[in-house]
Image 1 (tube, rainbow, N blue to C red):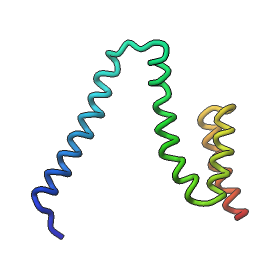
Image 2: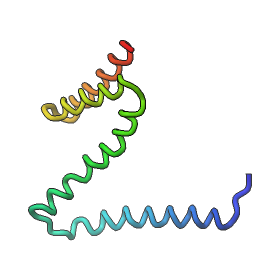
Image 3: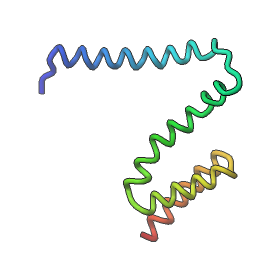
Length: 99
């Protein structure tokens, strides 16, 4: 397998841009004075990204995983994070054993 210069520079360029955007977010996030709706929007980003990562897997793998995701989402409304994770893992294990 060979790697030409164009492909190598493209990969390195994408890595540099990705790294720069992450560092810029860390550097400039502290300087933003957020209140009201802007703060609520920024607080909603981590759960939205998490759902965007989890939802395709939960919906494309089978009914045990989909049902376990629903059970975990319901648990997340009432329980702290560690307990929610435990409920989610237990739900997947139990539902896969049934299937």
